Image 1: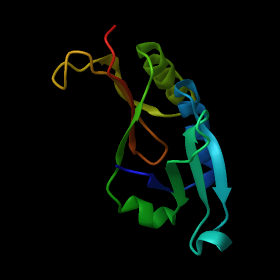
Image 2: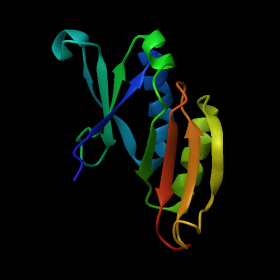
Image 3: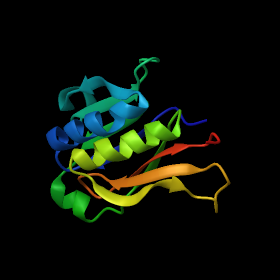
Length: 134
């Protein structure tokens, strides 16, 4: 079982704002901020489900030159409904993300796989997915 994961970002202020807006429709929010003096490296921010108050998705600030050479990461967030997937996609695009797969059924995964994909400010492929039937 995965407890938490992290994604490197080149501009913490920009990414924190983007993820705050993009993840709000699926019940995720900014729960914790840790300065670089505490991490021993760079500032980090933790997002998680608002109801649990436990950060499980972290952003870590990195040197923009280092980010350019890194492969992009894919992270999928579980959404409670197809409407939440749609709202995630709209919010992520409104926040400046780039469409990487409009909301819809991806039957090649399974008949009820309803997902949407958006590229974050650093090009990471961020998805919201609902596995419930329509």
